[in-house]
Every structure is written in structure tokens, then in C-alpha cells.
Length: 84
Image 1 (cartoon, helix red, strand yellow):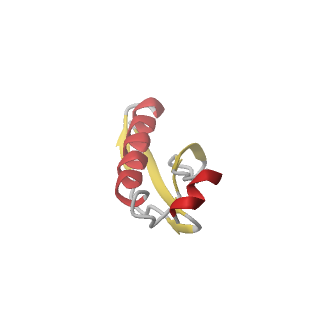
Image 2 (tube, one colour):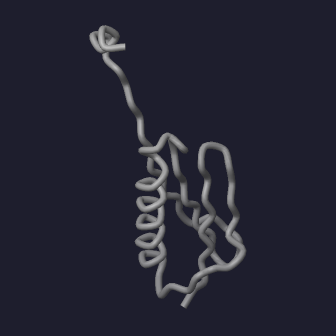
């Protein structure tokens, strides 16, 4: 079992994980990171609270081993100006 730490970035804000979680493999930690990023994004992106959520995973040595990013981009087309 290895310990992994999940740090979160939201539009420039950084939250560093102080306590890690144990997983049997990097693949398992990656699965958890993707799930976490999707859940945070689902809660925050549609409200406009954030435009990009990044979960950075560190190993027990403090080395970043993977990064998961979710984002939302809204583009209005030129014809949409008539609806403003």
C-alpha cells in the first residue's frame, strides 16, 4: 500500500492535503482523483464558482505523480448577441 496526497486547485486557489490516503496502486489513486475532480466540478463549475478544477496527486515523497483537470468553457456565438 502506498500513501497519496490529493491537492486541489480552483482558479488560482490552492488547497494542500495534509493527510494522505492509502491505495494499492497508482491506478487506484488515479481513479479516486478523477472521481474527486468530477464531483468538485459538478458542484462548482455550473454555479460559476470556478472555471477549472485540478486535483494534483503526490506520493509519500511529496513528488507529483499525476494531475487531473476538469473545466467548463461557455462560448456565446455572434448571433446570440440579439438575445442579450
